[in-house]
Length: 525
Picture 1 (cartoon, rainbow, N blue to C red):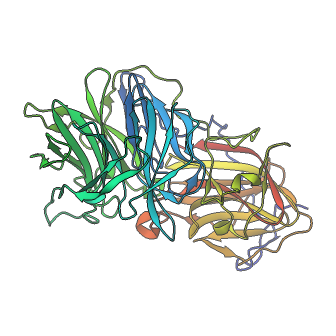
Picture 2: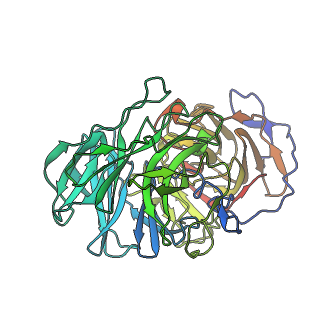
Picture 3: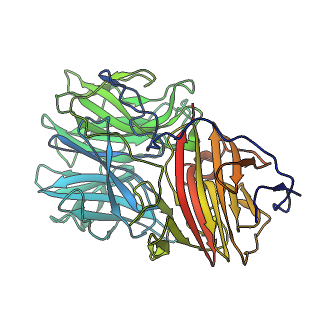
């Protein structure tokens, strides 16, 4: 049976009538990478972002000549992705530090102490919030199971070692607490130590939101670099501030040039810039790595940005990158290889590719995966994308396209999506005989009945600067344009919350199975 038919009655959402033909794109597939926009310009300069797409709250560890980075992964599992670089511009993935779902993971901190690596992070479920730690003796793992260290009233733990040799976690709101010597539990209770820096009341910000403390030690001073102003909301809200103290216990004195950096105007190329880690380069130059939204593209999530800083004669630092709209001189250091990772996937197995994560998976979610045959065979779950734990990948381009071949088994529904959250997504699914349209996180028809036959088809999704078109094919050669187009510029945090990004996604629902083959991603001009 062919699926090359168009809709008869959009309310029903079934393909029953005459085809609407559209020629497939003639541009050949490129090698799909984590982001097509390369930061390294190849002439000794780079252009932000250094990690395009959803890479929020970056925490960077300098370990000799190597840099390791992790970030907020929220509801995506495996989570806490770890990246490796030697020049802060070209990054390669090393894997993930957590597979067991403990909730939405917010701003982590990656550190090394006495030869062991630690990642401290908060996680939130619908029922509770806490802070956790994972550890490993090698950066590539294996990583420990997450250890709950409590502190449910705080987020964004930042690790530090005091002049007394003891370990501490600095927390949101200006508190800190001592850690046990092994770093795996808390000693005592948090104590408030820092009131932050207050910006002028006339500034347009989301909220005060003092968070993300990161501690550096330089020339006899401890520096606490913090975010205030809220991570979203008005483009001018988020910012970087710093304070210093001779003792880890305070008192902390604010920098006279606070804020160190903020978006001054919505006309700038990067919005809501903030949440910085201060890093020393291998040549003595210093940098801040932080996140920001691309002007007009909240949907891509908060992207990782790199800015040079300079130290002043009185021991403070100033930002030197401007609005980040122009190329900057690269840090020293050799490249670790090709930047990013492939997004295109032939599903050859034997495991899920590094580009994929389940959305809010169950503890046994990985049992749904089967690579024993041709492609990925995915067991259905739930009835719709909202309860199917779709597989998602991070896109870093304002315009891109992806396609996939699907073999939908009896009793299953499979589809291709732009997925923000279980409340907000758009795309098309099929039971092998008819289609269901997903828009606004709703289904039309409200439910697609399972088929006893199933079927084979191809789906193509194009997101061209928020305008979404979908094509279908029965043979992968001749394509039909789906008769409904969508506009998704509002699929982002300021509308739906959760601090997420709009991602390419695949899902399998129902009691049957869906086999996916030949996922292809490419950026568009």
